[in-house]
Image 1 (spheres, rainbow, N blue to C red):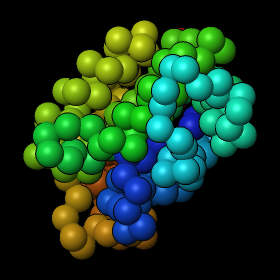
Image 2: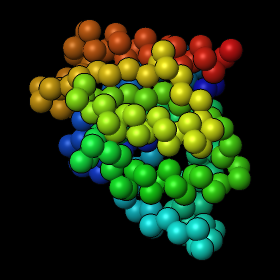
Image 3: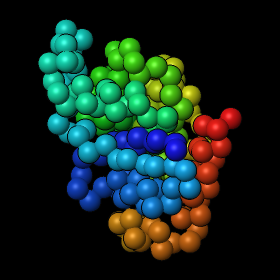
Image 4: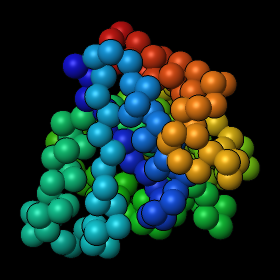
Length: 174
């Protein structure tokens, strides 16, 4: 069973990125499970002087990320960059010895969010992550696609998302 940890870069309750990840959960191919990490906003600010073991939520996040076979990331763009809370989570992973290199697929909910995607690629490759480009797709979501059901009801978007997940599964099996 392929174990995928999904990370939404948005803290918004009505986030299109989180909705996209929830739709991905429903479209996961046989043999793949996708768990969405819900604790992004509760992580303390990263400081290399802090011992992550002093924070149970950081420890749990690091263990869970280390256990995952791959990451599935959907991240919005704020002020032409990666949202601070999401970058904070990535910073905690940088110092995690058990994390190591992972395969990652990037989902983009907005065709206009190119600066954040470029910045995210730079950060992830610096972390020695392998971006599975054929599994990384932009799925432009309009306001009508604000929840997972609407995303799944759009045959074209659902097919692109399902294809990206199949591609990620193939990359992990290779």
